[in-house]
Image 1 (cartoon, rainbow, N blue to C red):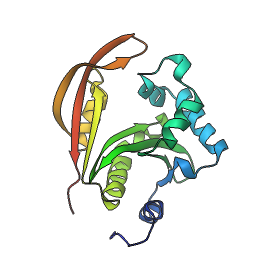
Image 2: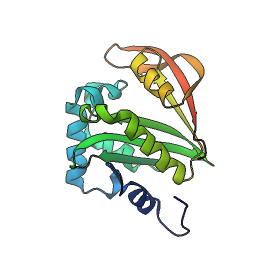
Image 3: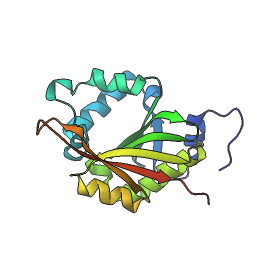
Image 4: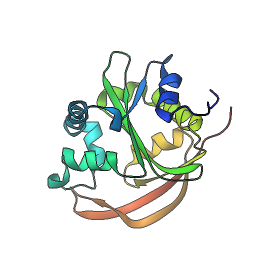
Length: 184
């Protein structure tokens, strides 16, 4: 879908997704109750809450999540299914030119569609002008690495002891990943 001058990014995303099974909404455009409901879904979901590995229990609060969603330079979004079910969330941060740091996380309900959802989200980001995404994951999370590699990411390096795992109370190695969004 070509970029229309003057169209907001959220309108582009809505247009891109309207014909698909998924709907993407910016967290900042959700009412507070819906934001709180998303947070409750994330912390109660076994799959989604595992992505909060660097937070101590006292840091896992709606207020901290809402602060992250509103942080300048962050663009946090949620993914709904066709029936309105909560499936995933993602954000970009620290955009520099056509690249940004990227994080994508599923709720259990979204796992059956993870590859299809990832393809849609990456297409939406490409339409929004992103050409390259970077991410940092714990090296010990092999299932996350397998998913990222299946999406086309490449391992750019390994940083010893860069990621804090709160439950283990230790620092683990991180893998720096890069994903180049290719043209059609």
